[in-house]
Image (cartoon, rainbow over all chains, first blue to last red; front, side, top):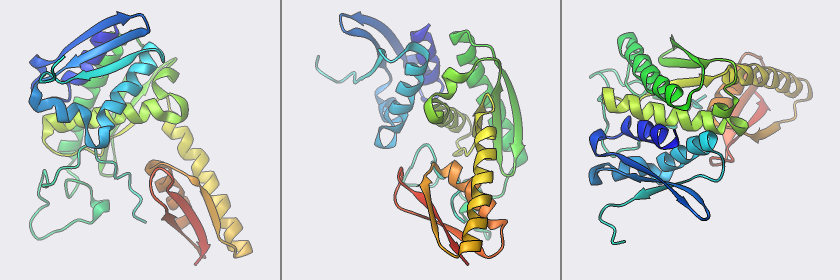
Length: 79
Length: 188
């Protein structure tokens, strides 16, 4: 449910909704929602001074409890 | 007073929509110039779709009311238990409003000033703050001593400014920077 909810919230605000991918990973320290978007949309999901990312995290915490993390994954990032 | 909630979701360098030529609306006039009921109704519809999708996925029961209040779209989610979507001091509500405005902006290309309420939270807060504003104004009028209120959100300050302005002999202004911005009520 959580990844679907975040997927919906992000798809609604980006220019390339089909490029949105959300994965829920369970790590030892808790659950992480990894969000991937089109590179042109990265600024959009971060927002001015990180406001949009913060809003997404706030809503996901409300739905999934405080333990849940939201990571915006930069596709250009070398991992 | 200029304490309209100005927390426009995306601050871009260039204006998204030019105001009508020859009429330059003040900030109170709205981000997209003269209010356009058709546009505001469309904003409400887009917002309702976005929020309904979230309610479905999260398996939350809620009905969505759409209205136009003043020159902005007003969307309310009403239902039995929506407190999780309101959050402590309305933090989740503010976050959802922000995201909903962005979703509307994506569809319309116009920055939205849509107001979201959930479970009547804003309506209740508005009542409390109207009483606070009126009582503070009357106290300042009678004592002639200025009173500084606690920091509030732009929405909350707007409600207090409106209540103070209904009382003769006092005025209100805001001072400080967000999120510590607060109202001072003084004798006029």
